[in-house]
Length: 266
Image (cartoon, rainbow, N blue to C red; front, side):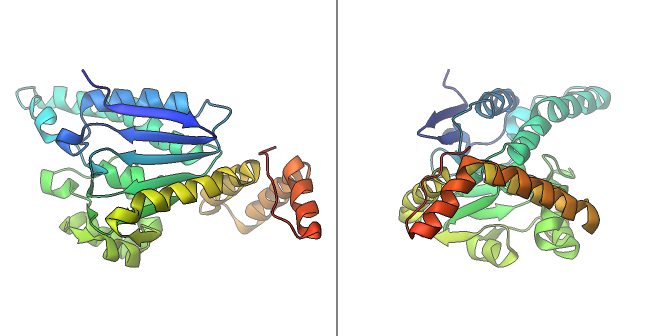
């Protein structure tokens, strides 16, 4: 049986690829487990400087695997409740937490279907580059469900509470240009340009000051929950820590010498 999630790290660039193209990379229980294990392995890699999340076969992720979930319809309501709650808490949530906290930039490469947990996964990333053929929907309400994977956390922060309510309650599909207007993707490119665009961005980030990137990620993640005073202190601490790195020295010397810096991530 083929692996439902593929991963690797080459030259500092990590790749986490959803691999159920025959099902538009829909999230099955098997894939939940594989995604949990793959993400846990990836974030432990000391050579990881940037992570790219993508889906094989022209689609990012078409939400949950409805056929797989339908196997639980003959269970009692209590059994279904426990099965889904346990799977989300033990397999889905840790993936999102890792992507949100790994100390390197995370880029979503989005094409085709991006629905349900696919949107959660995309929004857990720092940057999202979408193909113009991408189609988005929260999808949950159409199945009598609310949200998972942090979508009710990420989406209001990205688009505002009123627009998030519309996207959740109506579950309408929208295209890549609308996603760009809403601010949930950073760039939209032609399908044939997506690979090159993401590769160039990943290479640029992998060559950057990865320790500083990690501290930037932490500051941004914490900013919405902190007071101004606490955020100012956190910035001062992060600034001081980064000034003690080799990358800071290299950045200053490169600026003074009018050359491109060669950061090493330490």
